[in-house]
Amino acid sequence: MNIEDLGDQLAVIGLALFTTLIAVSSVDAAQAESNTDTKQDVAVIDIPHPREGNLLMLRGLAGNGTATFRVNRTCHTMPVRFVAGDFSGQRIDVGRTGSIRIVITAPEVMRDLLAGRDLVSDRVRVTSNSADKATDLFLARGLSADTGFVINPGRNLMADILGAGTTLVDCATLTTTLP
Image 1 (cartoon, rainbow, N blue to C red):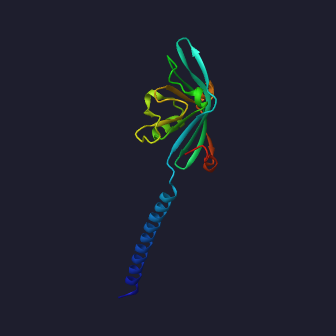
Image 2 (cartoon, helix red, strand yellow; image 1 turned 90 degrees about the vertical axis):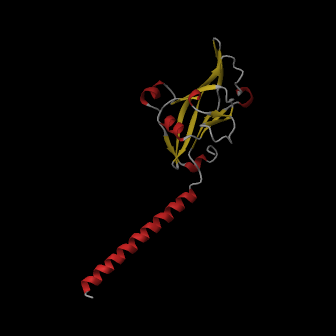
């Protein structure tokens, strides 16, 4: 056995050892990441002071609020406009609760809202039961599942034209807002 063969063998052994260590460390990092990432993606829309109103035969609510998002362990907030109602107005519960809270659990609905697209209740699966995992969002407070609503990203017409801006926030400050 000569020195060149020994050097080649040591190089192959070193490369194999290095590759094994990289594979083990990446598996450990992935396991640690999955263990610490117990919170799933979620968005919460809060409308603190909706106003009731009538327009001809329609009765409903309108107001401004904030959408708070946790997506891929990054948190954002965005202003939103809200309108809800129907012809009879019998399905509106705001007189009893005062504010409205909607929790979005479907990633595609969150992405659409973050991208500036309107959220229309007729286009998503809505429930009032937080345990129902087959829906896109649940109405935690202020509305029944039968009430139609629309959420527009932004505060005004300029947001409709230029797009609603989001603000990056520290997720630790949102522990009382996000579930």
